[in-house]
Image (cartoon, rainbow, N blue to C red; front, top):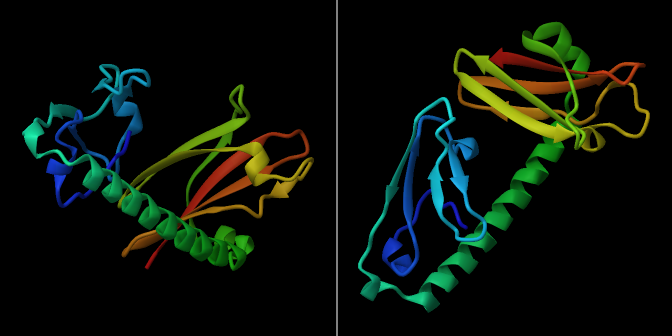
Amino acid sequence: MYRMIECDNTQLFADRALYLCVNNSSFYERDAYKYNEKTGEISINEGFKGLNLLFDFPLNKDKANNEAAEEYLKEFASAMEDDLQEESNETEKAVQNVDINKIVNHWTLISEEKVILDKNGRIYHSYKTAYGSGEGFVTVDAIFEKDEIGYSKNVSINESDKEKNVVIYYRDEKGDVTVSVYETVE
């Protein structure tokens, strides 16, 4: 399954099932829909608390072009890889320059929550700001070295025109993890 935010020629894919998903989040809301791995069908998650409209997107199958569609997907995947690598490099540089003490002492604390790991060792967190909201999850192994105590060197940075927020992870001597979200308004 591919989720495309923009496509200049959907007719290429006319022989496939296409859907138009509408939700009120800033990106594709995964929990809003159910995806059947076997059939490739998408349906609405009735239990989702938010906007999740779903429309079939019928096209004239005669206008499908498998070769052009596959080439388009290859170019799309390559561009995504390049973008992700560039974003990863930028984030890595930004994270290396993060001064956690400066953030804790000078930024505004939005939320602080002691979290419980799920059975797979993941931490879930969410927060709201004046400009929007965010949520995410990460595995403990990805943010802490074995037996590491204190603030993790791994942080999550989110920026917009108006604000910057940082998710900071702290593990105490008992192994309990606290997720704190700070923001600064530019």
